[in-house]
Amino acid sequence: MFSDVVQMGVMQARLANLAAELKAVEEAREWAAGSWTPAPGEILPPPAGNEATAAWQRALRRVAALGPRVVTAIVSGVVGGVTWGGEFRRLDRTLEALDLTKLARALTEDLLVQGVAAGYVYEREDGQVRIGRITGYLQPVLDPQDADVIVGLLQVQSRSDARAKWAIRYWVRYWDIYTAIVQEWDGLDSPVSIGTRPPARELPGLTPRLRVWGLEHDGSPQSLLLWALPMLRDIMASELMLARAEELAGYPVPIFGPDTDIQTIGPGLPVRGQFAWAQPGNLAELREQLRYKLERLRDALSLPGAILGAGPPSGEALREANLRFRQLTGLIRSIVEGLLTELVADYARAVGVEPVPVAVLPPRDLETSDRIQVVAALYRDGLVPMRVAAREIQPYLPTWSDEELEEWLQRQESIVTPSQVASLLGGGGE
Image (tube, rainbow, N blue to C red):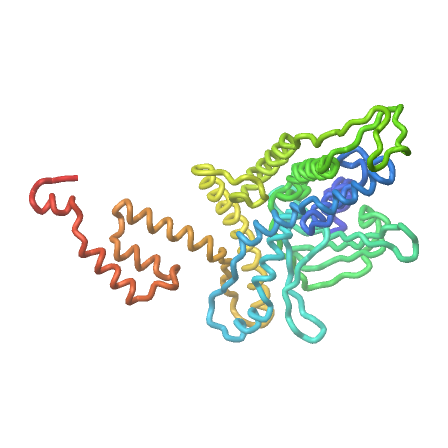
């Protein structure tokens, strides 16, 4: 049980650093939702005065939310749909009602944001069996004798205490994979105290299923978004500087010397004293710096094309970017597919049927592009005949009917090329 693990000291060091990790994961979630806002002075010098503060607030409303664009691009590239095998009509109907595609997208986002995706099968009070997601801060618990074996899952959520203003209380669950028992603590001042007090309740018969993107050397989870947080903050700083500079440089600014009487300036009156117009500066370098940072983030996260609004790569660089994106989404798809298969297997056993395999399908547009490119390359290399290649591509071109395809094939097959004529005459032309 978990108390034995705590006595062995496996979790104490991890729990001691939990406050900082909770803050990082919470920031990653806010980036994913597009709601993260830096405090004044956090990423840029703080504004001074009411006018500067108002300009700062206007700039914050103008900057783009990169987090949702990144998460949406990857999730959409991973999950196009979900299907499963087997011939159990009862299971088919219930799985359709569960909406596994929606669950797959949510689990993919969990994996991207915090590096851990987890779920479990449970029975509701009305007797219905459901698949639930495990949310909050999730920390895999490793076997003390084998760092590659996960023996449990720590789930932590922080809550404001209504009875004590500004006080934070923690709700903690430990999910034991091998005993299928969940231990729960509530109202804790610190998650570390679970090692010194018994759980408030135990819930038997709940087995967590989880996948991790990766673990740091200290056991804390890794994720793409957590890894990219410094780059995201850096880009927002550049966007804020550019937004504030554009506001100031949108029109000429009058500059007065110390001897100028501003009160006597009016239409048709000469300006007495020192006066000049400060013309808008050139912001091209600042814009170029922002484009460079966006391109660096796109490359670091293996995103395709101009997904972040920067100039798209061209030629071979574009093909390489799209290939890396398909490799990344394929890896994530296999991770989520394995987790869904385990959850559906638990669900099938709970409702009394045999487990079935689950497949997460890629988006059809990506599948179409890849399939057409492969078939076209095989035809160009002479590995498949034209008729076979055309038949393979036809399902992806819905406006191409069987009759039109056959007519086109006959026309193509009736065309005699110069090389064919030369071959027939024995000339051996090219």
